[in-house]
Length: 259
Image (tube, rainbow, N blue to C red; front, side):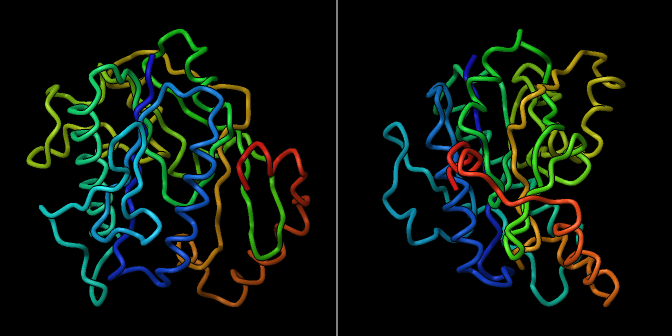
């Protein structure tokens, strides 16, 4: 089994803070590249390459690919649907590119460009018995400003970096292309609804590892969920929650997630 990891990157033209976007991606890649099992490939697809990725390679191939086929959303009047379409296009292009690069990939993982993965993520996935997919419901929510972690067993309700799909089910048509994005599972189901793909559409079992393998980074100022906290009460609640329910990250946590 080999894991293909696709990372869609927000465009500079719609990023609230490009430095934050790039810094978040850099931390994500640090956590990814310290994997204890090297049987994986990954690629970042976006419109503009962060400076730190210029010339950077993984297994001899360029890490970043600039998508030319579709323009970024308009910052002035973009809706959530536009952002979702943009993300789906980048995921689709990334799968297409990695499929051409490595035909041994058997499982696909869509990883957001601001979340962290445990050093044993790939090792754990490879220990599973070739499931139809994986849902990573066990993990952490991390609040950088408060430096607090909240452990959760319902991470898929909040975090986009929680779904994996076997290559045999990743596309309805088998072919992966921007001309038919809706054939891609990740483009038809949100992270919150992916379990329905397995239970209702293909009627196959998915795995749910007990290990906490994902850390969802939120409230850093440039993710979509920050826009929902537009009232004083919501902002106060978001500020207070990590102090009430969270703990400071341990040294072991920081080592495991490349922090």
